[in-house]
Length: 214
Image (cartoon, rainbow, N blue to C red):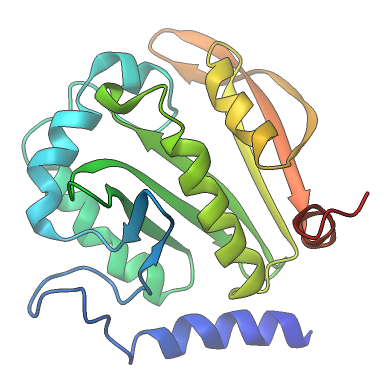
């Protein structure tokens, strides 16, 4: 019970501590900025909308996700970014821009759909096609996994991918997730049903992996 309260209080309290990386009068929510050697994970701002539309508007990327529409029309990126603060404030989820540290280029997005009652979260992500094959998705997922288990005190994090997108499955494997099964013909996408593979990891498993235990 205490974990549920802690997670809920975390989301409520975060709204009163604006990040210094968020411009005033912007709609980005007040998330802490995270990072690694190559990447920065920061809140989105409306200034990111053109890059979001350009990257998410690629049909090959949209085909591999369940939620990105195609065509990605004008105004969609702004509406999506504006939704982040409300989702965060209600404890429903959080969204990060994935940015290359050296060039400050936006290359994708990553986030959690939060289930406070069950102390778990669904990990979701996309990386723009020009940045595929460079390990950015795995690196960003490792950063957010650590944040989820150490700061949010989640008990479990899970993720899923279309069977036709094995590269996403390899990301889940590399961050230590366990294959949990296939949901056959689970998603209706562009006129056909798609099989979805499920992965998950528990906090205890992540801790063991972190400290090199078997």
